[in-house]
Image: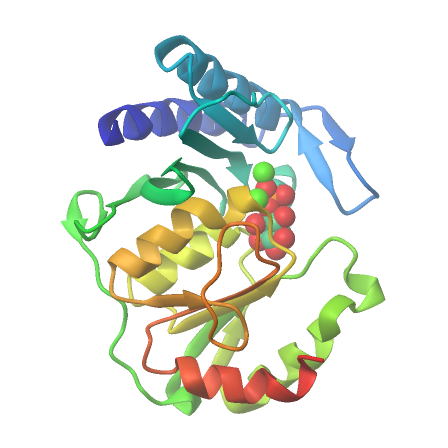
Length: 257
Ligand code: IPD
Ligand code: CA
Ligand code: CA
């Protein structure tokens, strides 16, 4: 199955690469910050058509609505283009993210970093890879020497869940904080040891599913902001190399209520 996910992720990546930089149609979903393009829809159609044909009994949860609910132990969780705002502005940081669950547990995940042509993959218990080479989280145990990444929800102007306070706290306590615009790539960069930690609120299941497994299989930890286990429906996500996890929890403690 992992080979199927890899193949279809790469094919979706081809569609996205073809559309990149072209004059494509952009629509608004829930306000002027939340975009969807014809390429998001084309990528999703390719992926969900493939799953529906090859695995007709499986359920699919897909961001742009072409999923299907069936009485199945298998659930495919699909973000056909993660980083749509970047894509629409011609910033080459975006990805395809596909996770596969059995009875609520993610056992395979693939994220394709389209423009870098790097394919991240993980299977439960088998480690994580980037272009088939094993990847590991960083070994840095000092928050003040850490490079972190975050993102903001589309209703950021309302400062939901104190996103701005958390951002300021980490800007002060870490070496640097970046905002790349693709949560799936943020997870992959934690898994490969580029970033030491990543936090974000109000992500969706398709932003989390594959990335969480890839970080965990690379030796990292993914929890909520208090260190509790999470699932793909959780609204507070903290991913790190494990070594700075408690320090990151401590920085955010005062903003949790
Ligand atoms: C978005 C990206 C972004 C994150 C947003 C997501 P989309 O996904 O992952 O990094 O900050 O919360 O919604 O809409 O480009 O698939
Ligand atoms: Ca997304
Ligand atoms: Ca998306």
